[in-house]
Amino acid sequence: MPPSDALARRIAPATTALLTVECQRGVVGEGSALPELAALVRETGVLERIADLVESARAAGVQVVHAVAERRPDGRGANRNAPLFRAVERLPVRQLAGTDAVRIAPPVTVGDGDLVTRRLHGLSPLAGTGVDALLRNLGRRTVVVVGVSANVAVPNAVFDLVNLGYTAVVVEDAIAGVPAVYTRAMVRYTLGLVATVASTAEVRECWRGAPEGGQGGSPRPGGLRPA
Image 1 (cartoon, helix red, strand yellow):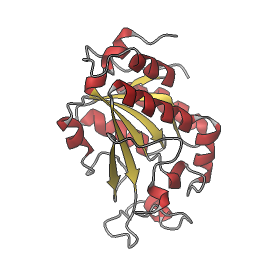
Image 2: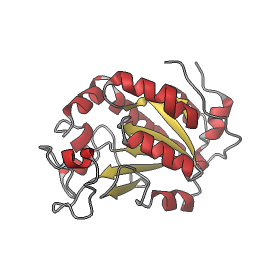
Image 3: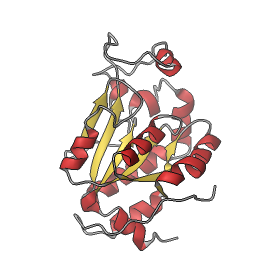
Image 4: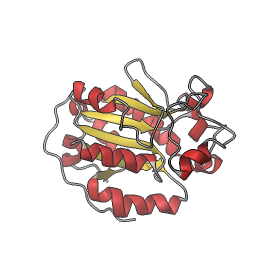
């Protein structure tokens, strides 16, 4: 099904950024600290779809931002106020700054014009990371969100974007969480209430047909999508 004209206007390259969330080797790569999530991402083709969207975004002039989660070896500044943070400290693979674990996982690539932001604390790719200021300085008002996980970081990103006044677009077949059925429920019953939900094919087609740096138009509201 071809994308709507409203979606094409909403994600016009001149005013849109593509945000990849925790697409790093220590999370979605072969040596992941979260093997169940990493296996799901690879087996379902999510990582390949993210890679395709990154290439499509660059070709269309959409700003690509990679949000990486990492820790200092001494853990300084990291949260310890939730069970998740304490569990992370016990994992066999740690997301330590400067290691392979925090490098972007193939086949996703980092281009010369891409931005890579790193957070040492919290759950959100936006809160306290500088992403908001970067997007505003670049004149980006819509953010297309892909990556992991649908359990925590992706919804955090979407809610923060909406609270900061951005229009959020969730690519439903380019995000993942465990179990897979939870991701579908999250999109249908939560993210679809606050963000536009689209497929990889729809987004890629919009960018393929858009002139680089094309101007945006009136967006359409988000809404529920069938499971």
